[in-house]
Image (tube, rainbow, N blue to C red; front, side, top):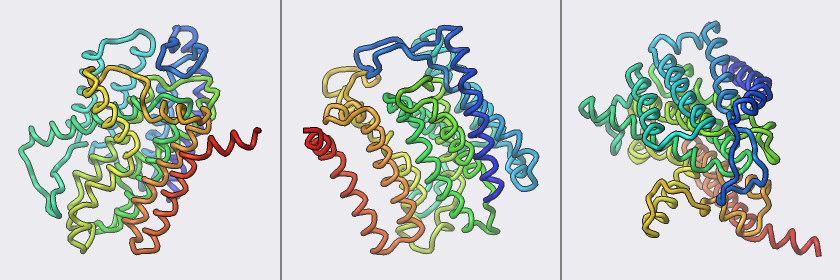
Length: 366
């Protein structure tokens, strides 16, 4: 745990220190978010935060290479693939932050980044299906890998609509995923807690925590596409590494858990961004729009419509993300009726605050 704590602290410190420098660069190159009807900010804000996040990730990987245990993570080549993929997707996002790219170019960049990761070993080696490891032809596995990356990066990109929202939710997801991955590593034969997924989530958590002080409302710098795409890719890399490389029958002796855990745990940890994507696609398709056509009806927009303030909406969505992510991990690790009851209580609290907090706050002001 100490080496992972060091990685997290390094990523946090470097990201925190570099972010003001990146903000100054964004102002110089005119990487500024324009005011649009669907946005909630009222003044132009610089965007290029992904460069600072990537700096934190790069620093963490350099330090890890010098540590006695974590340097073993690089032997498979997966971490090299993650860093290369992260660099490619951050570069594409940074170019888009400075001068808008068309969707075809951005999609091509995302596919390229995912392809590089797959080439370096971050690949679904098998698909966990009803408690067994189903091995599919390599072209199919590569396609599944790229699809996971595309869905995840765009899920994080779409939820990046309020100050600090994407960074905070990814931090919560990374923390929950770290716990899940770390504890799951003890089921390996022999146990080995030093894995690509655990390292990536520790570094991602540090990057997000270092960026949040600059990004929380009122934000001084947006992460932009360079940041949202990068964070999505890192979460996808962790998901692929642990879901497609672990035999589900080795996770648990319980047949039902073995069948569902490798698939449901990563999905639940990232459930809030994924839910936003599913709702957006269904909503836009029903309205006769293109699925990728932007609107102002995302989950965070609806929180504002209910009556939550900017910070309040973000904090409530943090709560939902934590309940879903850590609730799933707790059920996975501990199980039992006590855990289920605790999750139920947390859901009731989240529902109550979502529905009634604005009303209570208005009543107190009167």
